Length: 236
Image (cartoon, rainbow, N blue to C red; front, top):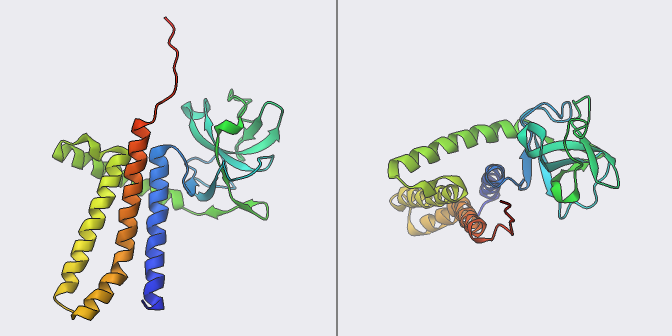
């Protein structure tokens, strides 16, 4: 494989990983490699739609004042993942605030953030967050289009499993199979055997990555459905 082709495949694979990590992270409610902000609460550090490298809390190391973390909020905008900066560490946990907010999240009614609430920490170099401009804008547009496609396919075929994370896995796997078949067909009649073999080897890498990602997604979705949700107590 030539250097040019290797770089091309590497760039395609990177693009696939970026898009899939963002979309799957949104489906699972857990940042995977990359994440982004949707509001202006972290300006000027992060503008709406900007992305950042999300280091999972399990491997991010200690958390302290100045760190930008993604945590599972209970009150902010009705609850859910929120990315704000830690401004103080207390015996009870972390006090957080958006860089563009005049008061802390806890002043607004959000409980003290515990270690268990933190999903990821933003990568910082030289004291500044590593920002990927407009990454979230692209991801949100892609996700919106994907949601529409999944809904249309589910309605057309009458299969609800085409929605959600499992549906995403089916679609990615199907696209990888179709792309491989098209690539094989287009090359079959125009090149000799050696050329076809070389071309197929060069062109299959990204399709293989898509297939593997789809299998991982299906395994993740299946595991999420079969793992017990935990003990619950009901009062009457």
